[in-house]
Amino acid sequence: METKPDWEKTVRRLEQLLRLKSFPVAFKMAENREILETTPFLRRPEKQQTLCQMLNLVRNFDWTVGAELKDFMFPTCPSILGLRDLPETHRDGTFRSIVWVATKADGRRFEASIPRLETGKYQAVLMAPLVYNPFEPDIVLIYCNPAQIMLLVNSLQFTDYQVMEFSCVGESSCSDAIVRCYDTQRPCVGIPCYGERRYGHAQDDEMVMALPANLVTKALAGMEALYRRGVRYPISFAGAEADPLDQFPVQYKRLDTMMAKLKGDDRQLLLGVTGGIGTGKTTVANLLREKGAPIIDFDLLAREVVEPGTRGFDDIVDYFGSQVLDTDGTLDRKRLSKIVFGDMEKRKKLESFTHPAIYEAFFREVDLIAREDPGAVIQVVIPLLVELNLQYLFDRLLVVYVPEELQVRRLAQRDGISMDEAATILKSQIPIDEKRQFADFVVDNSGSLDETREQVDELWSTIEKYKMEE
Ligand code: ATP
Image (cartoon, rainbow, N blue to C red; front, side, top):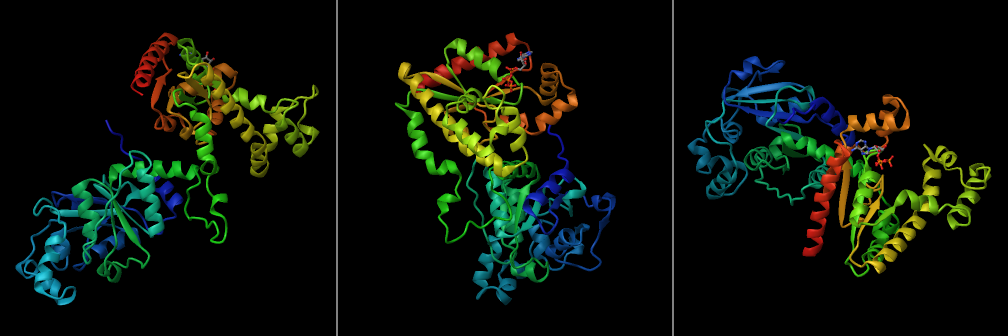
């Protein structure tokens, strides 16, 4: 059963990430007008109004508003909502030809182009700030500027990518957002019309996105993921006079050379293996090794590139000084972690010493393995693979999964710490349920070792089949 979203939490986070200026609107069409009597805090318009006036009362005045046919001025708005049919003076193009188009023939075409909800299906409309969990909405309207709309589009496209197509009928363009969203059950963007700007007080820079209520959490999840990748609002300016390459993600710059080094003769399969702390990455990787898949362990590489005598070691000691050395002359990694924890500048510096060397070591190992076995399935175990956004390096991604409560329990048990401490440690990682969405394969390690082994057997057959098809 689908669980009801916690709208307050969802909207507050959306407002924070998008810096919205007005409240997202919960919008619902009701087949029975009695809902107007039973919805808490509901206000009815005292005089006849337009739909966009009502929307403004919701998104800017913070009101819950409900209306039926008699509350609307003119037939236009209620006909769009299917609360009534259009009179002949509208259908024949007369009404639109008074202001918006030159001839009645244009007016007829105009009127016929406006999408409308099915006439007679509904008796009332309800609108309220979504943040108050007012009722289960059919759709949600988010008013914002074009940059924010773009970020919403990007966020919705983050998983299950699809092109978004929008329309604009001109005046009465609320129908482009609202009605098309009902009809298509997809996000629809509208440019609020002249009337909505004049009577509904939509600002010059405002657009609107209508989205089915069940896509709001998807939009938020996509936005969170993009936020972690540095895509944020307000959008910071890179500098029109600067070299854009310096501002791009570092991966863009070296993508071609990195992929050339990794691909070799392109017969090996690179399997990224990740999960959360203690979910069983090592356990599963060892089982896969028994099947014949060699392991490259990023934790090991990270240690090797800072051993005494390496360039990484020298750079680190030059920069941080002898305070980061142990009595035996090796690096005191715990002390180093403490120094860079919470100090972004120092952390970046440390990464600039270690990351290039780790990548080079990684390429070397891939090359070595592929030379010996050109068709190898190479497992690359990286605990923070998703946090570091390294998915692009791999042909397939395996997430070793256990539910979060079990992860906390196992971590507490293994490291002899309290459940609270274990939960705090987990907070520094992307939740395992979010990592799952990047996975091509999931091994659920919450059962017994035998159960995990069975899944690994199955996974291995899938990988072998895939390799044969390649
Ligand atoms: P880390 O993130 O700390 O490197 P990891 O993801 O590699 O951990 P493992 O070391 O494989 O995880 O497993 C963590 C702990 O859970 C180990 O003590 C392991 O023995 C135990 N464990 C792994 N799988 C199971 C299982 N199916 N049932 C019970 N215990 C398990």
